[in-house]
Each structure stands twice: as C-alpha cells, then as structure tokens.
Image 1 (cartoon, protein in one colour):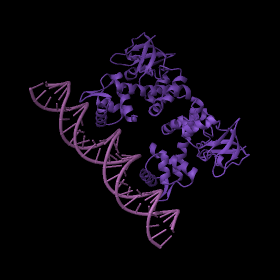
Image 2 (tube, chains in turn yellow, green, orange, blue):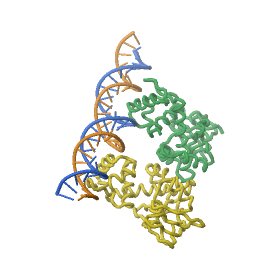
Image 3 (spheres, protein in one colour):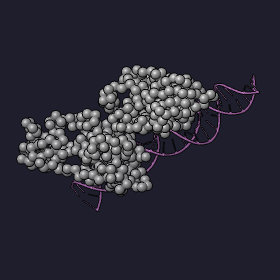
Image 4 (cartoon, chains in turn red, yellow, purple, green):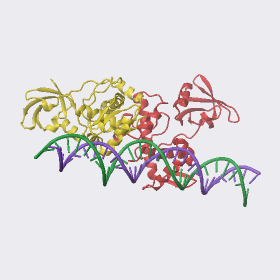
Length: 219
Length: 219
DNA sequence: ACCCTAATTTAGCCTTGCCTAAATATTGTC
DNA sequence: GACAATATTTAGGCAAGGCTAAATTAGGGT
C-alpha cells in the first residue's frame, strides 16, 4: 500500500506531463501546494524505490516509469470515476466533485471502484471531460485544442475544461459554457485580447487565461 | 481537522464504553490493533487537548468528555451511514461494508454525509442493527439483550449483531441469522453449552461466543 | 500485610513527510 | 564567456504516531 502522498505525487506528475510536457520541481511544488525542497525529497525517494516509480535527473525534472504510470492511472481512474459518480448518483455540482474525489480516491477498494464503474456503465469521461483510464491502463485521447486556438466563425463543442477551481467552474456554468455546450467564436481581439463567443443567445468576452483552459472539438 | 488516528481512538472509546462500561488501555490496544504503550501516549494527548476530549485517570481508564463524545458520534454517524449506503445503493454484502466504511468515514464531507442520508431517507439503523446517531447527537437505544440470555421456548427477532469479522458475519448469514430474522430458542445445554435455535426450517447449535454477539428483541 | 503477577506507563527511538535556510547549479543576457 | 537571476538541492529540524524495553503500579491470594 502506497501512502496518499506518494499517490498524489504520481498523479500530479502524470497530469503535468500531459499538460506541460516537462515536469519540473517547481511545477510540482505549485501543483501539490508544498515547498520545492519537499518535492526534491519525495522525488528522490520515488526514484530510489524498487520498482523505480520515476525517472529523475537532478536539476532537470522528473517523469514516470511504467510502474509509476500504472499507479498514477489507477489513482486517476479512481478520481474520475468518483467525480462522475458524485455528479450522477448524488447530484453534486461539477464544481464540487473534485475536492471530494481528491480525498476518496485514496481510500476506496477495488470492489468500490468496480461497483461504481458498473453502475455508471463503464464510462470513459468524467464531468470535466477528462478521459477515465480503463482498468487495463488504456486512456482515450483527450482534446488538445484550446478554445484559444479557434478562429472567428468557427463553431465548436466544449470537450474538456482543465481547471478544478470551483469559482472558475461556477463562472463558466453561469455563462452556459458547460460540457458539450456548442460555442461560436465571434471575434478575436488582437494582442491576446479577449475572444468573443456566442453561447445560446448570449455573447461573452473571454480572456486568454480562460480560453486556454477550455478544450474543444470542431463541430 | 482531527487526524484519522484521533477519530479512531474516540470512536473506539465510545463503542467500548457502550459494550463494556470501563475502557482500559489494553482493551483499546486490542481494539485498535496497536501496542498498549501507544494507547497511553495517545490517551494522554487527548486528555491534554483543549477542549479536553477524554477524561483519563492513570492506571484506571478513560472516558469521553462531552466534546469527545460529540466527535465520536459524528464519526460513528459517518461510519454507519456509509455502511448502509454501501449495502443499499451499491449492493455490498453485510460482511464487506465495515472495512470499506472504516476508511471512508474519515474523509467524506458534510455534503456527502447529508446527500447519502437524504437518499437513504434519514435512516436510524445500519446493516448490523446498530443505531445511526442523528446530526444533533441523539442516538436511539440499541438492544442490550444478548441471545445468550433468551430462554428455551422464546421467540425473538435478531435486532443487532455486534461483530465486524466478515467470516463470522458470513457464517451467520449462511445459517439464516440475518438482521430481523425470527429465531426460536429450542434448547439450552447446561454449563454454557450450546444454545439450539430454530431458524426457518433448520435448527442450529450456537456456542456462547456466538450468542453473546447477537442481540434480540422479544417477538 | 506482603508479594507476585499482570497491567500500565515511561523512556527512547524510528519513519514519514513536511518545513526553513543555506548552498549550489543552470540559464539567459550582455 | 562571465555574471546575475532563478531554480534546485542539501542540511538540519519538527510533529505525528507508531514501536520495544525497562520501570512502575495495582490488586489478588495466602
């Protein structure tokens, strides 16, 4: 049994690798809300573990080994299944599921995992559009096309929102920018100016930091 | 936020107080599967906490203060609600719910608690017949009449089974001795000999250590 | 009343995972 | 190519909550 802390590190390394490519000490520190010195300590421990869980090169960064990736995927499967279960079975709002799943993911048994997966019909996507890894470790490809890159005139479908901040998620929900919402790009101001999008009958101006976190599929 | 460990101690003290009256160091140690020396250390810490969580007298034992009792009841409410939820919503067998609830009880939010309580219709009894404390801290009286004390000829209803061991619970289930089962006491051998009980069409001989853990209501 | 046994407590140590402060490495700029 | 700014690592500590071994206390039996 691995500690919650180890599971959190492996999960974070997986997700940061996905989102940013290279995983540095400081990136992990920000993400896990600990000091960089603590990250160095833990990362060295993970690299010394048998089987080795991460590949670590001093002053450069860290990446998962196959063994580390497998554990990360199990934790992420737990997390995303739980998020979906909370939303579907218990009526949670999409901005509340992450915090609860964060705690539950480390303690549920395989039986619990299997039972909620079966009840949900072996789902492949969580309430934020992130893919749910299968038990065999396969993961569907997620959209990597930020709304930021959409051109005026395009119509797209919101496929994924890559942020856990409840305030941010509530803000989006209020605008009608929810999972699978259809959005029309009306206009883009130059120099990273706001993107104007039409959602239903309303038009909103979205800043760059917002559109960077919304991933879409062409419609 | 209290540590899982502190919550476990308070819960155990509450339950042992209920079941045995006086709570000694060694009783707690057995129950929590730690060494007596560790119990002494933690109990002293709980007694020094502000607000004080336990009353502790060296070499005599411990008991909960009102503040400690309140926390214990919250943890127990979590535990028993979760047990019932696992059984009713996820189809767990009654011998599997305890282990899972043991881990979940420490991490669920109040929102989770409220949502499953509402879904279950604000239940008052868990799958083993233990009362579920209400949010205001009130607890229904549980049966304190062990099957051991029933006389030949009596017909009783199984109201509560006070053991978490999965093997024991599966054994009882196999005999048909489940919650609310109707049982007839046929015969009692002298000198703590086995009690013969009729359940449905079958008769079983139950040893003292078994009948001590089954609590009944007159039928 | 005393002594022996069993229970309890104390003392001292270990591991985990975090922290701060100081040292060191890397990198971008001139 | 040197140096300043930034990132990372090392060193040393701390709190929690276990453990073992040794000391102490309580209580029952004679």
